[in-house]
Amino acid sequence: MTTQDPSRDRLSLLQGTLDLLILRTLLFGPCHGQGVARSIQRRSEAVFAVDHGSLYIALQRLEDKRWIRARWGVSENNRKARFYSLTAKGREQLTEKTTEWQRLTRAMGLILDSGEHPITGEA
Amino acid sequence: MFRRKRSEEDFAEEIRAHLDLEADDLRQEGLSSDEARWKARRQFGNMRAAEEHFYSKDRWIGLDNIRRDLRFGLRGLRQSPGFALTAILTLALGVGANTAVFSVMNAVLLRSLPVANPTRLVYLRTSNPPRGTGTIDWNDTFSYPVYDALHRQHGTLSEVIAYAPLSGGKVAVRIGAEPEEAEGDMVSGVFRRAKPSSNWTRTCR
Image: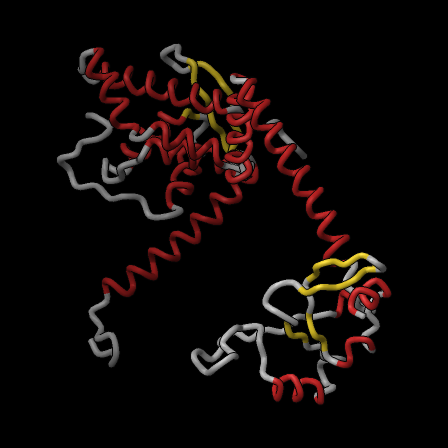
């Protein structure tokens, strides 16, 4: 499986969701940028196309906010890579943003799935 | 707490590391070495844009550009010292000459006006002189009734001085025993009350 397949339909990430996805990925332990990109793609069943350029900018933004910290290290296949890990602040943010996201999707679901008439409320 | 800012080189290094890692993965998925490298790069998208974004973060880009322009200018000047010298000398002379001329003008024309309060002296002119109505078709010429009205009005102007040329050319005057040619104007009566300097009184007597 390749990371990107132009023939398949993909969703571009909503504003702000990339940060949440990065934090969630790092919850499983330190990871480098390329690993984060692959992980997001794989776990979304290749629905999300992660733009690598934006990913590194997002990583930098999170690092600036001290939600994650970075350290140069060596990857499993012996390559130099910059490894990111969650900070305590990042963990807090992850919990908060996850709750936020779940509330949002629930509300969207309520509206989109209901068979009610939008004005009268009749089924 | 201040951390040292991460360098652009470090960011570029990380992107290079990413391309290597991605190419490794792609090779494992069965791509040839060249294909893998090429694909990793293509997937990344615009590398320069990411680097530029990183560079411009926390930076005042306008100031950065000015700094670069200045550096560029100075470098150019250093490369051609002859031109630099000429330019600097031209500027120096220009500024010097302007200052000198202004100093003279300031002393002669502005400060030595023959009235008590030169700073409050104004020169009246009209913006739309009526054309073809006889003598008054110039924008600093007023008819006598206009002068008279202005003269009677004390709200805005404390005194009004009118003048009219004595002749088209010069008139004959005598300074002491010496006959001389001079420009001559007829001035209105209040001229003396506006306290002209003694110099002028003498010339216009």
